[in-house]
Length: 237
Image 1 (cartoon, helix red, strand yellow):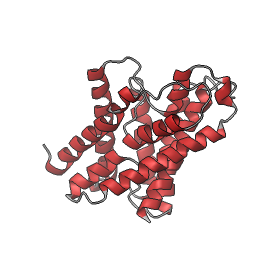
Image 2: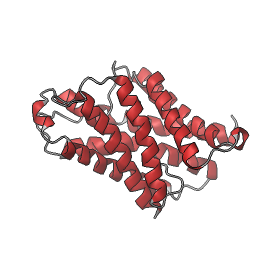
Image 3: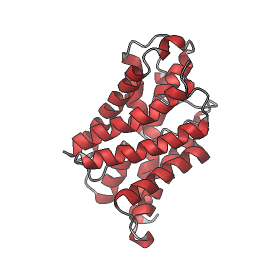
């Protein structure tokens, strides 16, 4: 049941998250040019409802993110869930992106710029500078994991249920507003990889390449950032 929850929760996350990017970027969308605050707000809400769906369908941890799963594994010392959870998350993200494609079906033909189309599905740097891009994705994910730990820490009252989920959404909103302008704040390997695979496979009019040369960074670096945060949480170093 945990994998079902992770699959559908991540699908909801991407449907709402990539959906707002499509609404803001695609031609003839009524939400076109809605701006960065619209995107970051909807992504925060996407996290909230994705988590709630995952919990309701059998995944009490509601990770929706391989970096979160890795951090849990490091803190517990048990890595048995990492691969199955990550595969369910990537598959769910690909489904969510496919649903975005179907939802905005007539708008792809109206949108001529291939870079705009790719931006609906996956992240890319505002300025291509590998060192800076690594710092952005690593630091953003480090803060995500550290923030989640702080939200649920007994030293802060141990937020639970919908309240805890709401604070996680606020954390993602803050990261997006404050740190997302550099790389688009993937901070989640599944969020970037699943939709990028969907972009690669789907018959989207006017699409270009899927920028696989950059794709390693939003997959590998969030795992590194999340892993480092977990090390700090577990051993305080």
